[in-house]
Amino acid sequence: MEENRLFLVKICSDLRIQRLLWRPVTMIGFDEHGAVREVQLIEKTMIICDTCGARVAVTERDLDEGLPMGYALCDEECIIEVVCEDRRRRYFKHLIDGVEIFLDLLNDPETDFRVKLMDYAKTRADVAEFCRYYAKWLGEPIMERLKHEVNKVLEKAITCWDQQEVFNVMEGVL
Image (cartoon, rainbow, N blue to C red):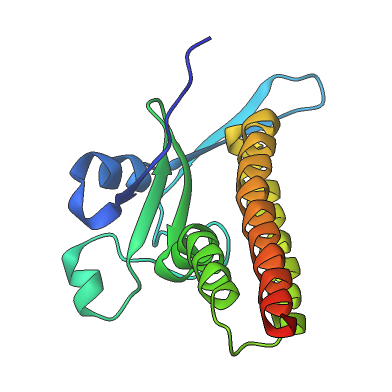
């Protein structure tokens, strides 16, 4: 089975994506016997973020007017979702930043161990939320594997930190 890759495309920089997004929506009405009653083409007046409903920039002019950058989450066959800059940061960058911040905090000797453990729990929860959200497109097995791999890194980091804490206590006693 061939694996589809996902990628984010800035809408304003890709005319093909723009044309696809601006295609009218076809609404088909059926009667009680299942026969087509009416067909309507509904023109779109704006493109919105699928997760928050905010209007997104489709052109450079939209960006100049202050609309947030719009991104299309695509695979090799279709547009899966449109997201705004805020949601892109929240769902994609947030996961990476959260793990990075946790690892930096773990290495900070001035930070209390309870704060480190609370941040560890928060980071694990963020990983779970990210994987749960994207499982509907990427598939449950892929997201479970990603969650497992990230959590394995977090576990190894917390174990190394814990061992280092024990060594530090032992050095202080000796």
